[in-house]
Image 1 (cartoon, rainbow, N blue to C red):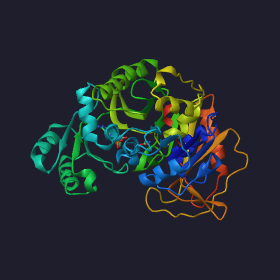
Image 2: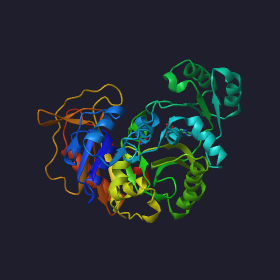
Image 3: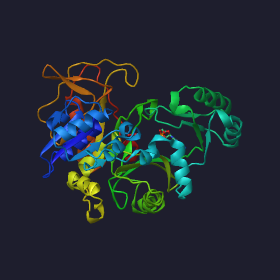
Image 4: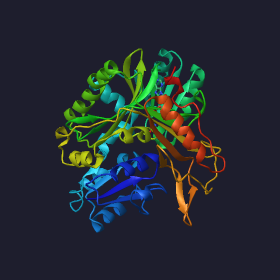
Amino acid sequence: MKVLLLGSGGREHALAWKMSQSKLLEKLYIAPGNAGTQDAGENIDLSPNDFEGAGKFCLENNISLVVVGPEEPLVKGFHDHFAEDPSLSHIPVIGPRKKGAMLEGSKNFANRFMERHGIPTAASFAVTRENISEGIRFLRSQSPPYVLKADGLAAGKGVLILDDAGVAEKELQSMLEGKFGKAGETVVIEEFLKGVELSVFVLTDGESYLLLPEAKDYKRIGEGDTGLNTGGMGSVSPVPFAGMQFMEKVEKQIIQPTIIGLREESIPYSGFIFFGLMNVAGNPYVVEYNVRMGDPEAEAVIPRIKTDLLELFVAVGNSRLKEKTISIEERYLASVMLVSEGYPGKYRKGLPVSKPEDTGESIIFHAGTKYDNGKIVTNGGRVMAVSSFGNTLKEALEECYKTAGKIDFEGKYFRRDIGRDLMD
Ligand code: AMP
Ligand code: GLY
């Protein structure tokens, strides 16, 4: 079968790498992809937000499945565009329709959904310009730190965590006045959850689900989790503190009520659900839903899936996922992100990248790279992820760092403490 994958990051390279190993795959196209995805298929010059262009490409090239990597096209209704066009509706899309994508596209929607279905999450209150005084009252009823979230998609930048009530009130005002644009027209004030975060993923057809390996990601630019937030500096899987007892709670209290809740509310769903969780003294709480795989979590999760992922996608498309099982590699997988100097602030692009021919036990997933005159050059802040297996987390990380040391581009930076907090 011929498949179209939308996106261009490390997550998409991991998905492309995995699908390219499927016995079902005849040809994979990636729109727009990066220098790495070229090894798994053919990149095409098409934006993931060009729905018309994607539809035309699918018909002209006899595509029989579309996999959507990032959230934006889903929140904007990519799947609905296909489902509602009689010439495209036969093509399954992996990724929910607009309504299901609101789990990520609106934090207020997600919180109200969890409230309706008794799913543990932070207490919250949604504020608009119409109910500011009630919002301030709620804020004052919370103890610090104060969590303010732009309701809509804000490219990972819409969350503020503030220690001072006065500052929080001012920030609330400026968010409502457009600090994050339209995404902040509604601001969600949340209770602060104190604990350790982890990311849990399922693949679902809306009826049944398969649990994928969990992961922990490292969001800050600096070692010891310091400095600015980034798109993610590395990830590891499995997460040692997510033992059987904890994961049972996650399934019973969070995953199952979510799938049942979607069904009860007649929200069809096909694709990944990413549960951003906080482990609060042994109990899981939802910090956020995402409607896609995580990045960089995908680079530590996807290679641990031994089952043919494309076969699972086809089962999602046919609403027959309940007939499938998933087999997971037991070994640890660690992934370290190599980033451009200056990231997550300003950085240069177009710098030549050299990598070893023999990458040993490591898999290199490209993120911000492209070909320029036949040579790989940097094309983003997060340049590539090095993922390695190991019998222990330590072994996996040692392998990552060995390979990371052999990759070169001017200004290369990576955190040397990925996974260290889990090894004490
Ligand atoms: P989000 O965009 O919702 O993932 O938020 C970004 C980050 O802010 C999360 O990964 C958490 O580290 C933190 N965060 C968000 N909501 C809360 C909360 N209610 N309590 C504590 N930390 C939070
Ligand atoms: N790693 C967090 C995310 O993909 O949103």
